[in-house]
Image 1 (cartoon, one colour):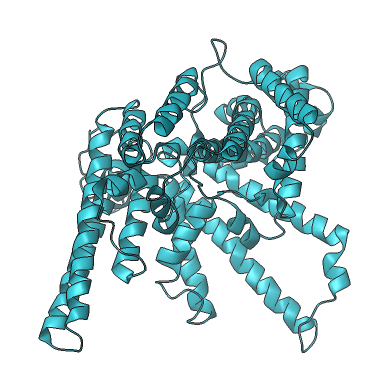
Image 2: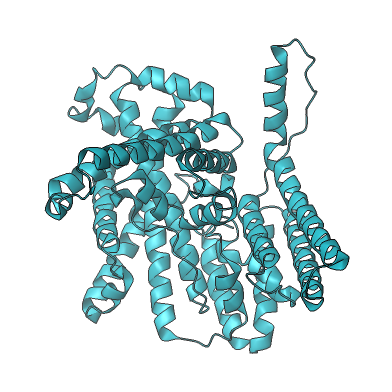
Length: 509
């Protein structure tokens, strides 16, 4: 069930209405039931995998806590304590491998065998036969990481294991963020599921505003930009040079508004029931470095890899070379998480290389700026420098998106080859861009919509609560703005018979 469908528009009010009508104790069971119904709209069989992941991590958490309790009650050292410690490690490893094994089979089995066969072909070794057509279950990467984050927290002793199966199953499957995040932590979402949430007019207003803005980002900006991007990337030989550059810039906008739009609708939907999900994006394209970009882009995933992979590998506490190596591992894994293709791995590693280059540049600046390494506050704050850093960072990130959008190494190479000749720069002036499926009128609407996004993100980058600022305005201004946005979505959104309803990009990951 997609957020940008009539089905969801009818589903959500029904869920919220029954949620507040039911007794407090019955609400978690109600949300759990509708969450599974929501998920099964793609394929009823997917629910088996979701339930398996839930059951494994729930039982594993209880067992880990029981062993930890027994270990603490015995006090000091001894054979019993060591035996208990080994049991905890074994239990943790089994739960981890079971969940990662399920994810690996459905997401990476075909890719792994194909890669193995390609490597073995150089040594004239017979290929492993593989004719299974495995369909990737929607959202499996997201809920698997969320459940494993809970399991790791229990193993570390950061949280207590959840005893109530209904609450824990809802934590893993809560429908607004089930299929594309944000990847919530148990300290945030699981805690909220234990608290009663009464009806609050303020939550309703803000939640509906978030949903409306998320639909605007998805249907008006992302799906409109997708028309141009798909046409160029679908045939790069016919649209070479500057066409590819323009399409890649529009893809940067598309993927941001697509994923940000989903996360915003998810936050708004949850807020209608008094549940606050984390903000997954914080104006990332205003970043002045690649490192800052990754603190603002897909925050829940970046935080997950930082806390559960980068830091356990040693983080930045074991020397500069080890730090860069750890970072490369994290970004390579992050790329592989996004898709079973070497182009995704390259995209991840490229972002790691960017940050390594930034570290090197920082060391050189410190070396040549004087003994104290201090920079002039005035120069650091000047507008021209900030603008250059922002544009340069956006250029690096956009170039990396090329490999992400291409989807395979072969396609990436072909696109780069076709992008080499930039002699057709006049297409920026002669109206040729309007022949890419987005005519002059709709291109104007798209660019004006991007301007709205720019203004909102600019305020957000400054740390301001844009939704709160809007809700404090006079009623006539709020009404006019909301009616205007609804008009734009209805008139210029991509839906209906002319265009297929666009699935959110991150559903495929």
